[in-house]
Length: 209
Image (tube, rainbow, N blue to C red; front, side, top):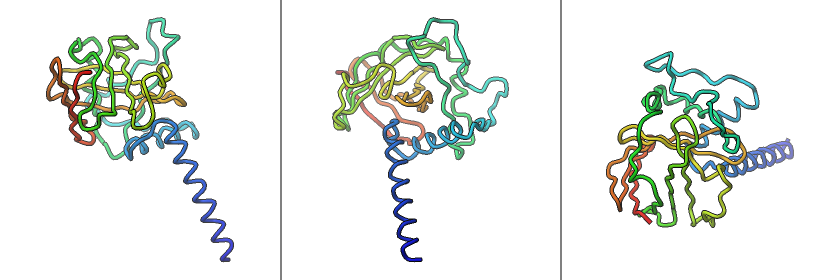
């Protein structure tokens, strides 16, 4: 019985380590991303449809259309990853009517985080589809540079604005899923960018590179 328990816990530990390594390889870096990633992988493996969330408008759930009338063969198109179950509100309905909104051109460019100077973010005006544009980020503390990023893979994100809110859909190399984030901009100038991430309420300040 003792040997059985030892083997059982050893196998369980190995499976846990393998699952953690797979999640890290797919761009998961914190608990909220892990929850969302686990949901999407479970739905992909089991073939289960994502659970619908109650929103203010049943006809407009804030998701991207399945297809767009553009030649985007060179760019990956994917559905938005569902939010974790504990978030009962559809936080992205505010973007349903924002597809034709103009973005603030001061957001474009290369920004470096003041709290973590190894973290870089670039917002571009390269159109990705459905009112979104491409951006990319990397952290040199993880031995990653801009040249290491695979085009439209891990480290890239799609973004668009609605007033002072920026919706970003982070990409991954191994999955067509998108991990959503909303940032509320508190300050934006030629030199400075300050925003708060709505899910974690974390404040970040950036300086233009």
